[in-house]
Amino acid sequence: MSIRRLPEHLVNRIAAGEVVERPASALKELVENAIDAGAARISVAIAQGGIGRIEVSDDGSGMARDEIALALERHATSKLPGDSIDEVSTLGFRGEALPSIASVARVTIESRVRGADGWSRVVDNGKLAGEGPAALPPGTRVTVEDLFARVPARRKFLRSGRSEYGACLDVVKRLAMARPDIGFTLEHDGRRTLAVQPGESRPARVAALTDRDLAENSLAIDYARGPARLGGVAGLPTFNRGVADHQYLFVNGRPVKDRLLIGAVRAAYQDLLARDRHPVLALFIDLPGDEVDVNVHPAKTEVRFRDPGNIRGLIVGGLRHALDEAGHRSAQRPSMSALGNWQAEPARSPSFPQPTLGQATVWDRHHSYSPQARAETAAEPVPQAGSFPLGVARGQVAATYIVAEAEDGLVLVDQHAAHERLVLERMRRAMANGGVARQALLLPEVVELDEPACDRIEARIAELAEMGLEVERFGPRAILVRATPAMLGAGDVRGLVTDLADELAAFDSALSLKEKLEHVAATMACHGSVRAGRLLSVAEMNALLREMEVTPHSGQCNHGRPTWVKLAHGDIEKLFGRK
Ligand SMILES: Nc1ncnc2c1ncn2[C@@H]1O[C@H](COP(=O)(O)OP(=O)(O)OP(=O)(O)O)[C@@H](O)[C@H]1O
Ligand SMILES: [Mg+2]
Image (cartoon, rainbow, N blue to C red; front, side, top):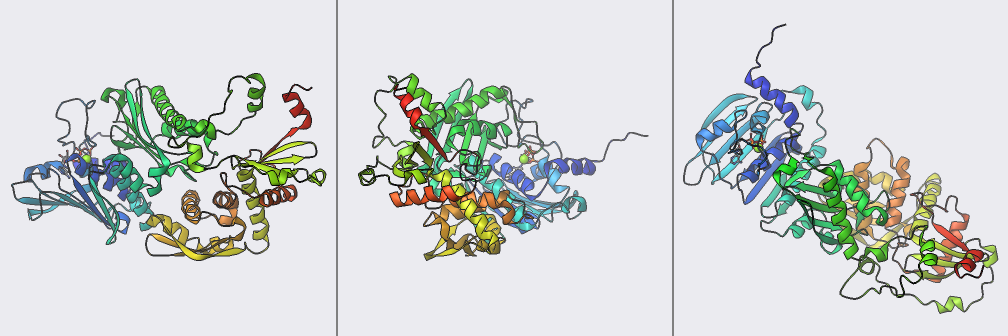
């Protein structure tokens, strides 16, 4: 065995294995460089999901002729003026992105410093392929062509252009969210797919890149714990989605993926959301450089906190604090101990908090309700309560729970959970009998979505039709909805299609939707006509109770929680100390 020093091109190729996993990772490095160069506007154009070409132009500082050459050398960086990496304020610092990319693609760098002429340099799979004067405005344009054309092992692992494009879009979104002061555009195969203006506020930028309704459905976060500070926006629990993809975390301005975030977010929203629903949020953590190590991952997408416990506390505390301020207590789901509280501490809440105007709570913003008097039913006798195990509807509480009187006690039904279960069971039956009945919309509805989301829906058009949802592709970034499952009633079509697209992203494309019927049905039910927060007529309530009585498994919702609880007459007597 003889040990030798590897030649530079091989070292770069090895580094590229870690840094450049797919087009999106190369794109991320280029956009980060443009941000570090102080750009005010960054334009990205890609072809075939970035496999064919990636081009990033910026109006930043630019590079002089000799700097361009240096930039393509390994471990050459302008970003560590001192000798410590504890104080990096830039996104880059390793000095290896450009040489790594240039070792596995054809890279052209054109750059011009203000007041000087432009210059360009081409490196093809590690070898200098040309240089000369270049005409361009002050700034830099880096073009990456034919990524991995000479690295078949890597090329083989790339997914379709569409799916690589999805990853590229995600990269641009995350970086654009980190820097609302910078304008960004993205073009894919000649079509403009994203554009945000420079100088936006942070909440406006987050909303522009996630969901434009987020602005009215979110809370501003501002919270400190120890040396760390948390900012950003968090969606209201009721503004939830079917996948956790819409959660963005930034540490000192750097987009990171971190399991800590997912766990902490789940803990903060724990009793406000079903286990399979996720809030939309963008959280920005700022902390001193020595509290976090950014140099733990070659692609710099992970960080290590010196005190992870404090960061978890920061996220849980910050979210919880904001949600409490917004009055989530009034929206809290009752737990089994709720009854115990009534008994043990009657004096604790002599008056109930009143939702007040102007100080909107999570609850009244979403379920603007006032207590409903239902004298018309109370006046009627209860002739058949005895023959109905779930009793006869007497009214509705908080537009969410049905109160029914049964022969042996008081029944409370969670209308949403119950409806969700019924939809699943009805769908199961209808699918077994050849398909779900559809109800045509009076006016077809156009739902705007990301291109990859539209692609996912389009790929499932036939299956969705079997489930009663009739849709068509409507241009690159929209879906036209013609009919919805009749069993849902008039629901929220846009919410339904958006959530289905999310849901499909999480499904293995090899699986049929039938195999995922539980998820699809749950998503559909969420947007049907019987939701939490919807006022139901007495007839609707009774119809729901009767259907529950004859439907298998209707006693628990699709998430395993009970759909109804009964307080027996004996229990009521105990509550009042009569027994
Ligand atoms: N768009 C750009 N505008 C101006 N200078 C740039 C640009 N892109 C790269 N450079 C210069 O080239 C150098 C090398 O870039 P490269 O991405 O390889 O390394 P880095 O950004 O320093 O560190 P990292 O490997 O962590 O990204 C940078 O330090 C910077 O000086
Ligand atoms: Mg860099």
